[in-house]
Image 1: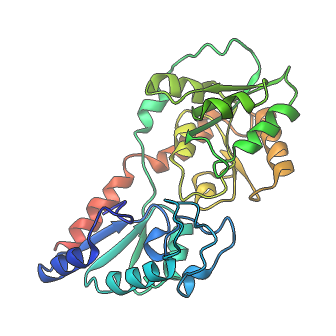
Image 2: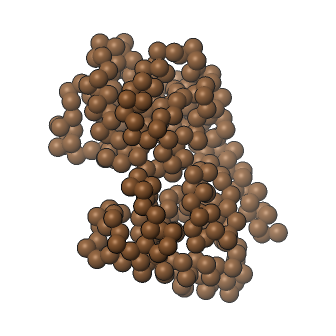
Amino acid sequence: MHMVNVWMLNFPLFVNYVNNKHIPLVWTMHDCRAFTGRCAYFDEIGCERWKNGCGSCPQKSLYWPSKIDRSAWQWKFRNKWLNKIKQLHIVTPSQWLAGFVHDSFLKNYPVSVIYNGIDIEKFRLRHVVDSQSNRKVILGVAAIWEYRKGIQFFERLSIDLPSEQYQVVLIGGMSENDRNSLPLSLKTIQSTTNLDELIGWYQRASVFVNPTLADNFPTTNIEALASGTPVVTFQTGGSAESIDETSGVTVTKGDYDGLLQAVIQVSEHPEIYTKENCLKRAKYFSVKQFDKYVDLYECLFR
């Protein structure tokens, strides 16, 4: 199982079925919803209601907005039925999420950390994009640009970085109103289904920046590393787990001044954060990660 936390699954029916049939269950959790009353992430606002039963949800307007707060009921429901599963093995793509599972009502189940993997060979093939500039490209990529993904930090970077030296580029979905409200110095590209174009921008960038405020283990970090590009990211969720000291820099979450200095540091010192170092780090997150799933399945089905 992967993303089944909302309305995709009748848990009482499903739990009774797997128990009656003696079926081992592996659940890869990509956010925190399995052990909260509704929300996918809570660390951004420092909420700890999930530890004791939720209720009075401060994020009622997020994650499928609701006018009625049923988070306490939902927490009790998930606690009751998920703890009835007889053979459950939890997988998380980050140590960060594993830590929360250990503190939740699922703490008695075994947990393995298996990082996300990608086909890194695709990102090593050379692609060229026409950036129409010799400036250093500071790149951000997201499916949908929003506050949680840190678009506000890119706005400030595009203003504070010298325009004759740097070009901030964002790839991803956003409304026309949001696009028009951004500084003219910030270049935006709508989400693309052209993988070659995306790889070209990853490779063209001097730094890939991920100022996310709530995340598990962003795959975009790995894609940048596999393209030979160093990463600057906030110490958010498992985002910092993707890099080491030779392939990028981590910054305290929300520290804009630290982010700005890290972007300058990495872009101005390519002799430290080399393409070779980034490619070496990316190998750890190749499709070989999926071999760990095979090993786990074989262990459970013996």
